[in-house]
Amino acid sequence: MSFSGNEELVCRSLSLPGTSLGSRRWFLARAGIAGLEFVAGPSWAGETVSLPFPSEPRGRPITNAFPEKGSLILQRTRPPLLETPMKVFDDGVLTPNDKFYVRWHWAVIPEAVEVDKFQLAVRGHVGMVLSLSLDEILKMPRVELVAVNQCSGNSRGYFQPRVPGAQWSNGAMGNARWTGVRLKDVLNRAGVKAGASRVRFNGLDTPVVDGAPDFMKSLDIDHALDGEVMIAFAMNGEQLPLLNGFPLRLIVPGWYSTYWVKMLNDIEVLDRPDDSFWMAAAYTIPDTPFANVRPGEVGVKLVPINRMGPRSFVTNIEDGSKIAAGSSVNARGIAFGGDAGVAKVEFSSDAGRTWQPTKLGADFGKYSFRRWEIDFTSVKSGDQTLMVKCTNTDNAVQPEWANWNPSGFMRSVVESVRVTAA
Amino acid sequence: MRGYLLMTVLMISSPTMLATASGNDVQSLKSVKVELPESDRQFPGGAAADAINNNCLACHSVAMVLNQPALSKTAWEAEVKKMINVYKAPIDQADVEGIVSYLVQKLGER
Image 1 (cartoon, each protein chain N blue to C red):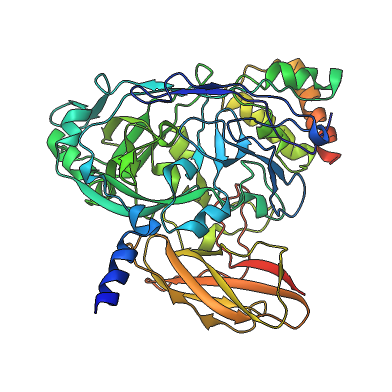
Image 2 (image 1 turned 120 degrees about the horizontal axis):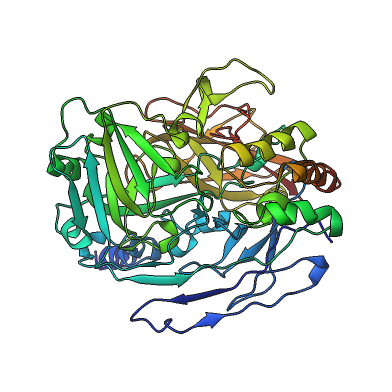
């Protein structure tokens, strides 16, 4: 009868042909701690986290019940919403596949993909309709890049006033090395006809209810042919986890993850605008700087969400933690420029009154996370607010005020971490 | 000089470097078969939860709802309307009021 928890009883089994995991199956136990139900697994410890949202509910269980996935924050069992804990971003600049966040719209997700049967269709306004096997795709010229994948609604739980939707903390993002083929090469193989306007992407997932809108996204033809948009078959050197889109996923560097269609099996070239639901109605933002509006504001022009902007995070000091007083303290974290590289990351240990440049880590390319680091002096006693701010190579900078819109998209504000020196 | 070379070797074999493995070595993919977890959880609250339990668990598990912050009646009405009109949730019109009042009252109590 407790409403303080959001935990669900889940079970899993996983089988990967040719691996020792083939017949392993975990069933879960129910635990009555504090009236909550917990997910159990091989290393179940009943662990929960408290996400520092402005209001309840803040508690979430840690789950390891999902196939090909390690310990993640359980936001929803079905369809899965799994969040990457911030400490994962402290471990390295690339997010391991088993710790990479998961987000699905519809609950009908194929649980098996046979590589010999899978086909990628390319159709519509093209000279020749294609049906490509995975073998054919793997034989095409390859490209590789490191890029951040971030959910449009990452950090939605921090919006004030609060808004409905997946209540993510800051972990609906990840950074991986993607390997695949250029979308441009695949489209050229089919031969895009003159007059093409959009390219629409669909995956194997489908709605539960008949008549509900299938999840599809589209890009302008020029964007689709820019040579950067990729169809990936590998993530950090390995095939993608099923929950991250095995066997193929669209990679749209610098753009929000809603375009990175998972389990991609259908590409349709359109000779007209895309008026389907997930482009025309869902995932739209106010056409204003940082998609910002006042709560209750009406009559604002809406456009499809698109490029990401710069963001930065402290990864080694948690909000609300205690630090040694009057001493030198190391702060570090990650930043990304969005659709451009990281130019600089600045740090403030006095709630934004003064800023110091930080030392940047290795550069993995303009679309990647970049590590930053600085030593600061903690106050002699009491509270201290740490802030971190990224400026990208196009001179876009994070705002020091919290942008807001009713969908909870594109949170961009300079983040703060409150600590107590003692 | 020898020390410098050793340092280079250590840097190359650090976990961060290993994590940057290229996918260019991937020559084939392996079929995958998994079983995704199910949730058997129902909305708590006895008879007051009947409407929401009977209508809202086909498409998503309870956490989607129980993780939401307290929202106004207007906001919850808009959410339920969206589920019906846009996402085609087959919700009996007679149950709408019961669902909305559960959401407003029970989630507002926290």
